View 1: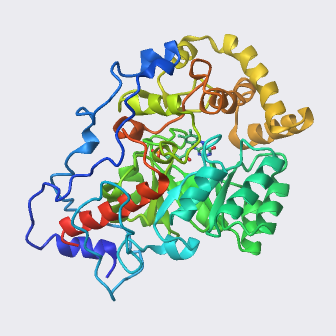
View 2: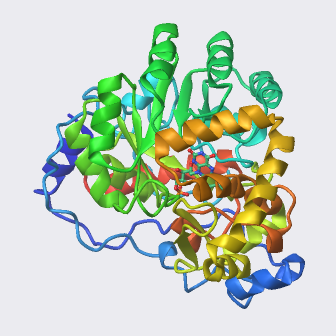
View 3: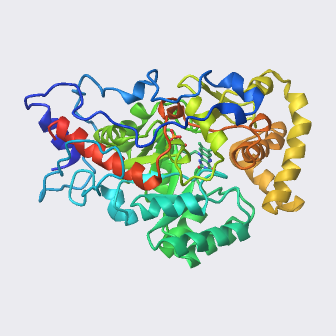
Length: 454
Ligand SMILES: Cc1cc2nc3c(=O)[nH]c(=O)nc-3n(C[C@H](O)[C@H](O)[C@H](O)COP(=O)(O)O)c2cc1C
């Protein structure tokens, strides 16, 4: 019986209390240290007190939904039927170093587990400057799918990062790319040579890239934000999609995750991985109930011990409330969700003409950092312009986002950079290891299924 059918059947059973059996606990306390290290301007954007105790104001720490969704999923049941063994029962959500979740035969073992060769239907998305070898290998080692963010790496750095991941784990992992990079086909060849399991894309790659990967047995998985995009890339032959709602990065559109997942999964046959707004096992079960085959998370993984983002920057994310983020075009002409900082407020107020010269300077810095030559940059720019119908001003600004992200996320200069995020940062308040996180999510998902009578 599929997870969806099981959920529907469960709705006819006697219900237990709506309160959760096990309240999710934090494996680690929020850092007690004050935000002294935070750049002064950033203080404007964050909550006043540093949290030394589990915050009461964060809604996510409490009870799950009071009502069970009564709507039968429209989507075809796409998760594989698992009849042989009922879901493993877990009565409490572990507070530290949880036991290994046994999900091989449960509803939590979905199509993407088999397709990607992973234990849990959980993906750590490619995040520029964030998901390097450390985070990616930690995720894959822990049973999820880690994805290296290659768009902000030189070709050489990508080679090194792949080698590093392989030296730390023999589990499958992915690489996130930008299909409009001038050396894209060289990168495609590298992934094929290195037998990387999955190539993911912030936006739909062209048919040529997909076909080359397909012929070589590398799975492709673009991120999409609308049903028609999913239908288009399915027709091109991609193996799965990440359906990202507006709660996530903001660059894939306005549709919330809760509407996007069922809409997309009813429209395509390939697995649909939900993204945008996930952090725990309840979210995983919700994504599966909506027709998804798993969850992909960015911000939640950024806020782990295995991510190499500086601690004082992580603290700003922890301190940000659910309404402390904004989707802005002020950075590079594209909508992007960021933490609302002093710099963002200034950029939003600034005249695009005054933003332009700084953007050009940033474009030059990006050239240096990624080793892109001027002709290559122009070539990339023309490809971007063609693919995405940008104005020349937007094009010049497009270099801003990576450089401004690097300033804060890598160099720790929060006052001089931007902090890309999902809204979920507003309800995250601790920093577990990736292994703790995955075990906790799976145990919590199993407890949630049990609570729902599945
Ligand atoms: C710091 C940061 C950097 C990101 N960089 C990329 C990127 O380089 N490529 C990409 O496809 N998505 C990128 N994203 C978006 C994530 O891959 C993912 O779609 C999003 O974070 C999911 O939403 P969530 O944060 O609510 O989990 C980034 C997100 C964050 C938070």
